[in-house]
Length: 96
Image (cartoon, rainbow, N blue to C red; front, side, top):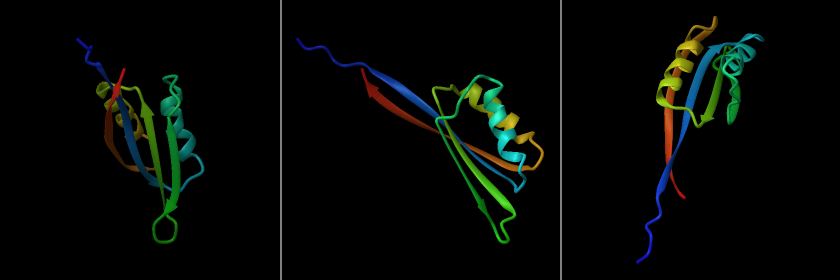
């Protein structure tokens, strides 16, 4: 009789932050994670829009739960200059 491998889910929270172009926006976005002792798994930012008036910051954070994802998104929405924060999640099954 062979044992059936158990799956352990892996959860990654994804954040898409749109803000005005300002030198202080990116450090303030990262500070939301740093205050909680977190380092995002992936960070990518792009200046965008007609006339380069916006910045799109995409972050991924592995290993956080739904409750922390909501709290992080709420904190990101309170940053001056941030106009929109969207969240999504990636859930993968890993075989142990």
